[in-house]
Image 1 (cartoon, rainbow, N blue to C red):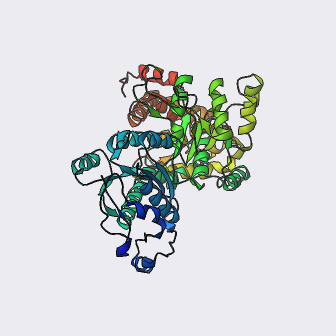
Image 2 (cartoon, rainbow, N blue to C red):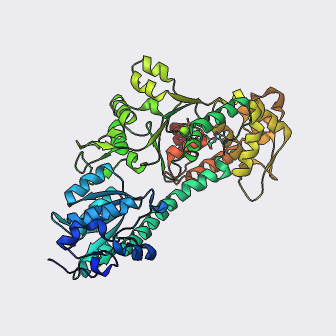
Image 3 (cartoon, rainbow, N blue to C red):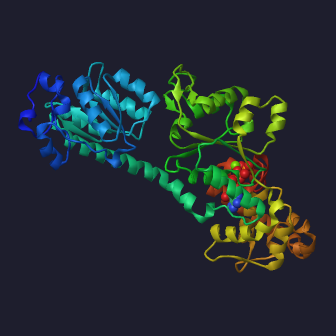
Length: 513
Ligand SMILES: Nc1ncnc2c1ncn2[C@@H]1O[C@H](COP(=O)(O)OP(=O)(O)OP(=O)(O)O)[C@@H](O)[C@H]1O
Ligand SMILES: [Mg+2]
């Protein structure tokens, strides 16, 4: 239905958007560029004659705006206007077009007309939110659509604007919605950031080997390079992945980890790439993959040697051109993620045995960070001990360690590397009396294999009942802490899952512990 603009060029004030249908009278549509559009008063009056300069607002530089409206003139005007202001604008004239575009681009704020030719704005809102949950939507509604607008708010729209409205007013709404998007993203990053900034997650080590690693991280972190982190179990591969992400320009976007050893092939594929509703039994909902969750950030693929062959080919495509498909979909998607991979296996051998694709190996092996074994950098042990005692303190008082106990720790070979050291210190803090770790508080095998420091081992052997109790209490505590998750608990305890089950059985611990 044709409507009269509230203000027209004749008033020299500002462009007005009208409700539904023809938003602009014909002649104004032809002279869109002549209409003053700025929100700023000075430029408004200056623009009465039709010439004004619009400045790109630096606040808009990263704002991805999505305009969905079937009114061509409105769409074009808004696109021109907001592009000039520095926003990245994408537009669509129908819900179908909008959903298609939402597959390949990520948006921050969407302007959705409530009446689209092929759908209602509300329906579109639901579908868009499903695809891009952190997007905020502003509904554009005509008079009389108030109830629908309110319904839209209930369904998660940020706000609505009743047509006709002024573009400057719209701009303020867009900015506010964008602030909310940024805030929500920052909040989501908060836990991750805290973890990063926490001393608990600092990379410790002054040894030459560790300084080399730190130097490499500093060099490659700011780039987009794919990085392969290699090192034995417990040497700090995940920590290095965090450091790479945390020092990259992507650090405000998510770091998402996928562990190839934890999932079988079909699950791994749907976890990573997502799936369409009904693509396999149990796929009740369309689900975005972790690659989408990591959009704009970093995807950390842990234990990559365990990735099945079919998936390796699909990952290679992502590395080459960013392309992938959800399970059950033929639609090509594009991922904007930086990939970091880690393995404790010898990939050259895996490749020779035809378990790992040669092309993927070469593609991954461009920048490699090799982590030394702990026994190759013994000079870092005492600093690591102090680091763990201060950042993973058990109880109200910080623990100290007697020199002969420290000596034993520095002599031991650490097959489980830093993870084993962290676990030994956790156990020692539970055992130790008076907040002092002595030789007696270290595992027998550790003390025995450190010959010069073996004097105290007989004390532990003499009181096996106490040790049993300590072991039971410790396993119980870790299980409780991990809310019964046995995979995590076994990892923390530095033992296999089977060994953990044996301990649960031995000590009669409840399964849910
Ligand atoms: N350089 C370091 N400084 C301080 N703590 C470290 C360092 N390297 C590793 N750690 C700690 O040691 C533990 C094991 O590290 P991480 O999980 O990164 O090892 P990983 O190589 O991924 O092991 P896995 O192969 O078993 O998965 C973690 O608790 C980590 O915080
Ligand atoms: Mg790991």
